[in-house]
Image (cartoon, rainbow, N blue to C red; front, side):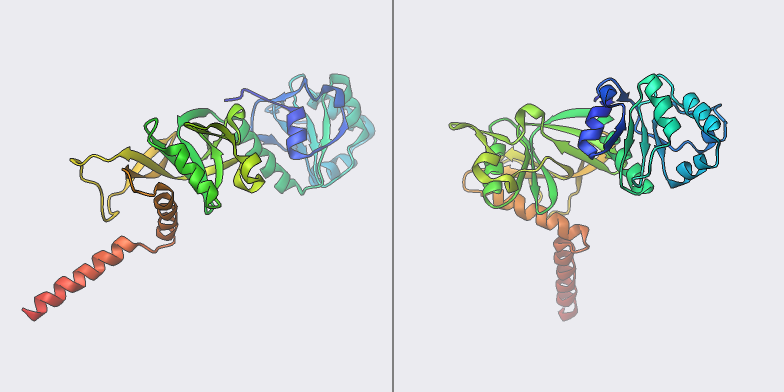
Length: 312
């Protein structure tokens, strides 16, 4: 988990404009994902001023400042320019008040801008900071994007996770992370997985070594991150163990506070794991859309039993 995000990184990743304070982009950091729209503060009410948040000015706030005298604007902007204020941000490509630039420069606060509407910009920054500041956890496994679904392949070392991922990439799917997956909770229902920087786009195949998937298969074969929709656990085949044959047993694994559906696939010579996992992803999506082959089979079985009973 990152404790903070520099304003320099915020500007670079979200392609924001810098109106002033470019020399202070590295020094200023954001520690909270919450955004402040300082409506009350512009009226002079500072009892609960959240000075440690990004201060977002939209059309309403900028219009309000135009009804103030230059002296009033400068006084309010100076009260808002606290030592730990990360930055001022103005939406819709609006012009920054001169008094804001003056007060911000006195304390070394960057003033930024964006052409996006205020609501969209607020949502974009909040989501970005939520992801950057979220607690992260490393999981052993391989994360692959299959038909738009994030499938986390887990299992003991040497069971064939990376080789299966390589076959999936050859079949047109996309690699996110091999061996170690960094996961974080985006919201109450979503966990996101990504590769550590040192392992990005790389895949380890025993006997060959490290391969660069992006270099060998192109940019379309990799993806930076994805939400984890399904966990496929590869397990060496145990003849004494009974495996689910109908798919009626539902299993879940908790990642942070989010339950993620999980299936176990037994591994033995002759099984094409890539195709099995590919079909598992397709079947999971079909179930999510209301098409459940297990229920269809059970309904057909019920009809057959009823038909045989009638004949008796």
